[in-house]
Image 1 (cartoon, rainbow, N blue to C red):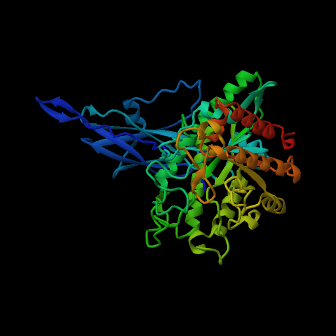
Image 2: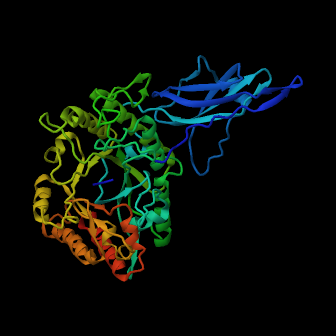
Image 3: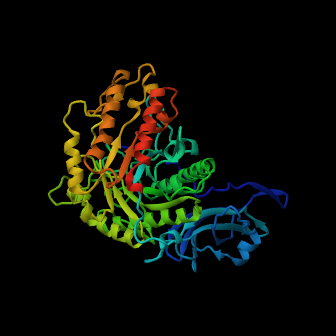
Length: 510
């Protein structure tokens, strides 16, 4: 039911022309790309035009508001850099778990190219913890989390355009709210969700024939959410703005980063497509027919996210862990497509690795999904269950049965709604909202009943004894919480405040 922005690692400086001996000769030009990154080394691939020699040097990318670091000059790169051989420069003696910038310059005779750059990160060695992880005793606790979809292709509906970008204004209604008693803090954790990248490559297994996301897509995903100027930077700004407005330092606020499925095939729908499509690590082409290679890719991704997160030096955000994008986990040999999914071979080692980093592993399955009954044995830190009740006009998914399952399995509950509950949106001529079957049948006349159905979620949490004991997640479609909060309709605002108070007054926070 659920749900990047391309990040150019380098720019090839096109060769220009220069006058030499009365004629025109090309100016040397260099392009750098990242080959492989190890814990203390990296291979930088070099392409050049009109160069006899190319030199590459690395400098740690310690970003901070007070940083006065200057880039090295061409002479410094030539005198202190590594000379590229056979189209690559091997950089050694680097610090583990660190972001770097590689600088390259080429020369031919007395002509020198402009400086080319590329960013990369070294991996972390076993047991390496960043400062915010060192201060923890395991994964951090939080009472509630809000799902934040973004970074994929724009919504194609003519009547309802969903933004792909998250800026501080879009985050603001998730961060805090105001009522007659003042301004209050809202969600404690924020979950990134991206289903496909802008090129249509999918991060999830059930892809309807789409191509599977590769290493470059995974890197783009990291940059969209955690890179310099990324969505989580906007979230940190939104929290800072709320702190200024309230005159108070916010309690701990956490980001949870989605984890792409390591899809076995280049196209999951085509079992004859290659399993060695993702890319290379430390000189080895990974083959996703092997669970060990899938785990290796996920651990690389985890370390890249952790490194980027530490580099951002956020004022208020900490990384709380990673979210399993797949909403079903086939983990038993008799499960559907087990040989192509086999989550029991992938998730436990990943969960163990995250546990060693004091980071959590989180999951939100749909009602009846494979793996729901064994979520703890898969190494998952915490799981919420989707009732899917909001869309169920037929009554086939009674909420009380779902609540019983949640209590039985020790899970949290996901509250669910989307734009079909927002009166201002549903007044747009011709707009309709989807039901449980995917038919666009909800209209403006359904808004009161959908609100009543949403209120049943909150009532059932209280009546079942989950309020104050189980964590709460909120799925509000692509942008419906913001639409409620910024609506000109009084009933929309009242619904938003009702939800906000339910979240902020949760006894689990105390």
